Image (cartoon, rainbow over all chains, first blue to last red; front, side, top):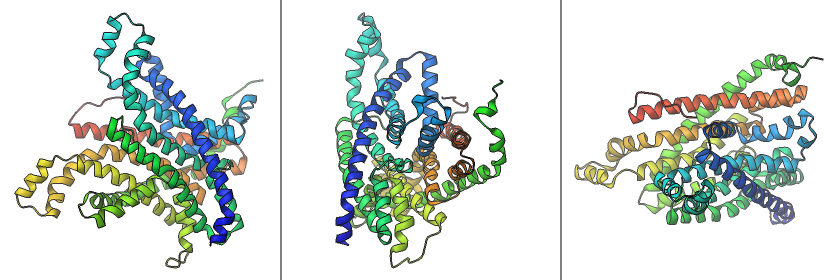
Length: 222
Length: 233
């Protein structure tokens, strides 16, 4: 048993590093996109709110697996050159878009939780919309936005496992490859993989709970 | 040269595969309902253990919830479906449907337990004290005072999780359960038509999702005691 762990560990380690990279890329791009969408949903004109409301419903209503298949298979079949994605770019794009829906809901919730008087006071002081967001509203939302981001990060880490279906060599894919080598030790290898996800996600979950108890935050269903 | 819809989306092929998609949607819904049923049973029991004062009950429940929440569902499905038959106690190959529903229920149980726990803990302390003062036993307190109130509070988040379960069931196509996603993959592997295959599947899931949204709005309005429907998008 130890020999098998010793032999498969380098593969799995490589997978864990790829999983980490994917999740970091996705949380960075996804948060940026989600922040913009959330901002538009909270203070944008009505037509923009409707459009992004539809965006969030479409992405929340379909499984992530379907979204990956659409980005990896359907987009290239349109024949447009820029859509000929490699599996890595398809993975990062689909995961970022998926992440953005969660972030957008948090940002929107946080901005809407600020009392309307704050907006009015900023306006009465002669601030532009940009200034009132920059100096009055957004500083107050940080405490509500940051704690739940930990929960989002865990969702992102767990969602990277699904990317194994388009041959991105992350943790689950590396495990599948290792199982081809040791077919009789499936339970051991997947157990090891589960353990590796666990030691990655558990500290983040603990940190999130601590931060939420300390600062509060917008609750989103995961 | 005229361009028509059929160049982009060959609805004739989709119509030809309609029986597959219908069976797929049926399986998806069935798997979700069964998962939700078992998940609620597991979730209620785990939530009761999690909120009990006895550490022998509380600690394993907390450990179970943490384990499930910090590992991906895909890995859980693989462990249950491929891993469990290797254990000497079981020693037989799980049917893909059994394995899939078992894994999904174990997964949903942990999340539902957290939802139900939040519901139980939201009950005012005075209610429990009043029940104690009336001389009710633990079972009676739970049965008549706490659970009915908690249930009314947890119905909206449970409906939200039901939508997640429906989406999660799409992962079962990877262990060859024939649900909606598999129907799309079959069309894909027969004709290599990704647009027809995957956009149809997406449309199927979206229609289930919007139906759930409608039902959940109705139920929430009923719980709030309002007559008129709120339209939210």
